[in-house]
Amino acid sequence: MKNSRIYSTCSLVLVFLFALGVPCSGTTAETSSPKKVLVVHSYHETQKEHVVEMTMGIRKAFENSNALIEFFHMDTKRKNSVQWKREAGRMAERLMNSFQPDIVITMDDNAQDYFARKHAGKKGAPVFVFGGVNAKPEKYGFPAENVTGVIERPNILESITFLQKIVPGVEKMVMIADKSPTTDQFCQYAKGLDLPVEVIAYEQPRTFAQWKAVITRYQTRADAFGIYVIRTIERGNGDKTHVPEKELMDFMLEHSTLPMTGFFDTAAKAGILCGVAVSMREQGFAAGKIANQILNGASVSDFTVQPTTRGRIMLNLKTAEKLGIKDIPWRIISRAGEVVK
Image 1: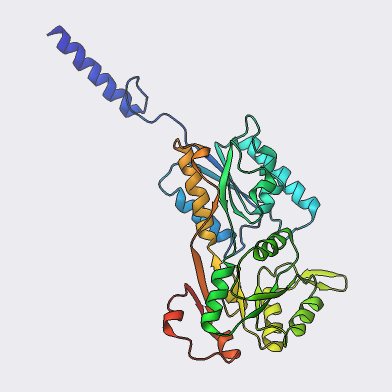
Image 2 (image 1 turned 180 degrees about the vertical axis):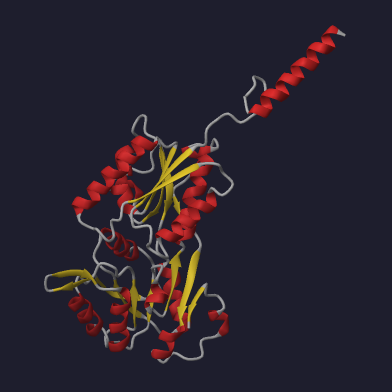
């Protein structure tokens, strides 16, 4: 009887403590604080079809997690001087030191070049997971014992094959991109591929005048254009303002009869006929998924650095009409994830 009273009293005490939210020894109440994740983007948070999509993918990867996620945007596309990139890297560093994350996700190359690479293999540094990287990871000292991630590789072969289904007979192509470390990597990567066309030139105009000259020069020498990123082409004559993609494409559509395929996320919206873009949402989700698994006990060595596999098929029917391309089969149109009408 005495023992029975003791057990009843203990039970009442435990119920009372539980009601007050006081943890009791031997209970299964969750006492650990949420894991902390720092996400460092290279570019500005409002960059649609890119940063916005990456962030959506990262959040999706953590949707069933109680992790505390902090975002920092280096904004190195709009502010692209070396001085700013270095300062943005230092700002990310200060935030990391104050936030003390359990893991850091870094997106796109500038976040690796001006921030993450300093911590690759460094004793006491947190785990880093990268995404959206165009350069060879070895450039930044990746992978390392505390670094893994996913790389971004443009769907060049897929985009050209898609173009050839719409415009049979394309055999000679000119590749065009702006001038930046990202596009330099694109040209290097494309040159190593076995493509179904002859690439007769790689052009990287820096100014609007150079863009116009390139478009005009190849009208009778090529069958099509392949276009990568065209976001840092300047007005010229001392004006360093970047010409909008739409304005560049408006000139092309007015002065060119050649079809074009694009290898970047806003290609169809900019006016390019077609393309197969890397899914930025998939890049974010893949990096976030790896980070979440590591937080839950997986090891960095469990993950091999590799590209994401899905692409987003894009088609601009307005451009097709302007170029005189008619009767695109429905089976082609129906495959597109983005159709501009």
